[in-house]
Image 1: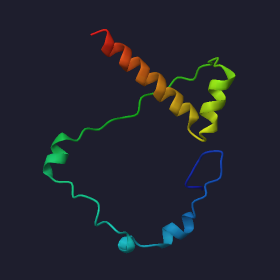
Image 2: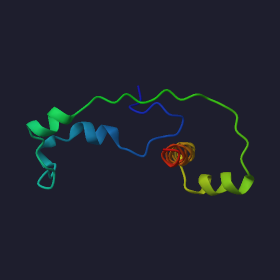
Image 3: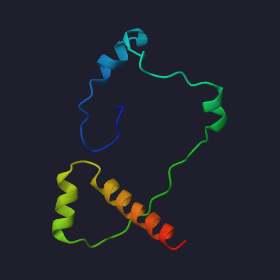
Amino acid sequence: MSAKSSKSKSGTDWDYLASESDAGIERSDVPRLGPEFWRKAALRMPQRKESITLRLDQDVLAWFRAMGRGYQTRINAVLKSYMEAARESRR
């Protein structure tokens, strides 16, 4: 079974990665997570998304698609940012 279940083929060499050990990973720039981090840590589950049909101007959709994979996620992020800014402006 593939390590990735999307329709597109992964460019990752999963067999090579599985054969490597963690000993060669450089971690000197990764900070240690102390007790304070874990006291403040909270589990965040992703929000459920709803599938809809949305009509967008052709140039808007082309612009987002030109950024590559994840364009729908970016559109959602822009809309969410707008929503949050609009909420803040009403306070």
